[in-house]
Image 1 (cartoon, rainbow, N blue to C red):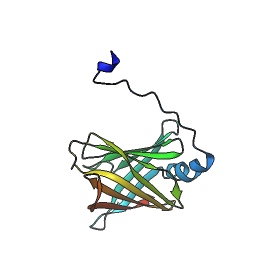
Image 2 (cartoon, helix red, strand yellow):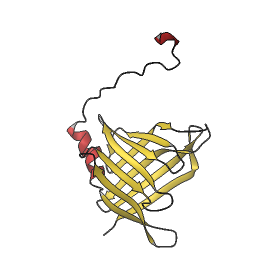
Image 3 (cartoon, rainbow, N blue to C red):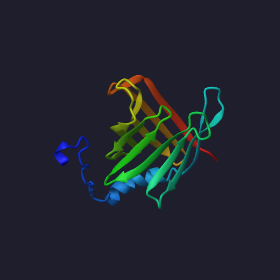
Length: 166
C-alpha cells in the first residue's frame, strides 16, 4: 500500500505561466547575447580563457563553460522557468547548486540560492549566489559567493572580470 512505502509517490509536474515579453527582454535576451568566447587577465597579467558561452537546445538554454580546457573547468546551464531565470552550476567540488533570478536591475542580474544536489556534508562548501553585471556587449563581471552551513562565506568570493575575445 502507498501508506507503507518509504518512497512516497512524487508530486506531479509543476506548471508555470510562460515568461512575459518583458521578462524575456530583461533576463533572457541579455544573457543569450553573451554567446561567444570570453577571457580574463590572470594574476600574472596574462589573458586566459574564462568563459565559453553557447545558446543551444533550440534556443532554450545557455551553456556556459567556466575556465574551458583548464583543470577546473565547470559548467553552468541557464534556462527560463516561467518568468524566472534559473542557473545550475556543475561545480568542480562535485555538487550542483541551483540559483534563481526573479528580475534584472538594469544591467545586473542577481541569482540567489534555490537548492543544491549531491551535498555530502552540512559544512561542505557550495556556490550559493552569483551576481552578473553586463557592463556592455564586450565586458561582464561575475561575482560568485560560496556558502557553507547555509550561510554566505565571505572568505570565498570570486570575481571574474571578463572581456569578449576578439
